[in-house]
Length: 147
Image (cartoon, rainbow, N blue to C red; front, side, top):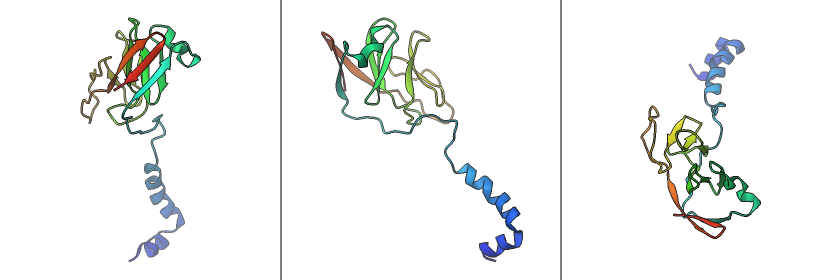
């Protein structure tokens, strides 16, 4: 018996009851925020710390997002930069949080990373990949972030 004949014998209500759950399971999980993104390559850009773009970097613990990179003035007043793309499942949701001395955190699945990129927790069904950390250098008010 072909699919059409089978569905016709079930009737519209039964066909809907069978197919609706299948359609719903194929959609994106609505609880997940952010996008799956390829990590940036050849990162090399500057930020003028006196610009409005960098206002959040004036205080320790502040961060900005630029070119898929999280640029941070950590709790000790040093600049640190990491990819915004989580090494767990490539979501673009890595941010800096002021806990445990300052860590990088992805709220999609709860991944935590030290300021050196070392994973701080085990996420089920994943490998413990480090978070990419970039070099920073400061000359006057110009902060360079690069590989």
